Image (tube, rainbow, N blue to C red; front, side, top):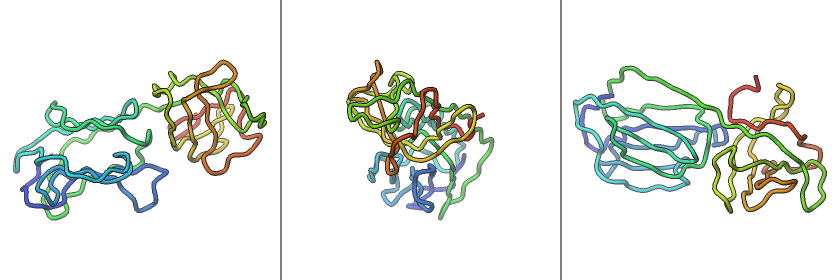
Amino acid sequence: MRLDKIDKTAAGLGFKSPHQRRRTVSWLLLDASNKGLHIDGGYWSGHTRDEGPAPYTPKKWHNYQIIFSNDKIAMFIDGRLMKLQAATSWNVEQFVIRSWRNTADVMGITSVSEATFLTVRSTSHSTDAKKKYFNFNMDDLNLRANKDYIRYLRQCRNGHLRWQGSVRIFTDKGFGGNNAHGRRDKTAGENQFEVGDILTSAWSCR
């Protein structure tokens, strides 16, 4: 991508996940009001702040690479790491290139997606609630211990979509011989999970 100038133009890259409000986009501004890099929104763990000078040279072509992996976002420009930060979603529903008050030339966009998934290994819990919770191995998702996560996932059973929405994941402990557990975030109830269910960030259960 090639941008014409650096002049507080609000040019940047935007990311939207399914669980964010319809009009909400997390922005990585390349030419913000500080004439530099600025983050704003949910993907950046809710942070809004300036991040240093503009990472590009006006009128020069640059290669941008954005990677979401292991609960982090990494941005590379011309192979050089410019930004690495914890993120709050495994899903990217929409990617936006915004020139705003700048002029952007874009050539050759490639998108590669690798779905995240876990298998429900048991539904036991200390509260004795029936099938309200799911247990799994946190290594399936490369999660860190003793943390809470909220993620938008699809629940698949026998290859068919059973439910989709936000789930709350706890990595402080698991049950039934597992080290992590979870439940639906706002609509948790009994008889929602079965052993063998798949929870995934993929767009389809097939």
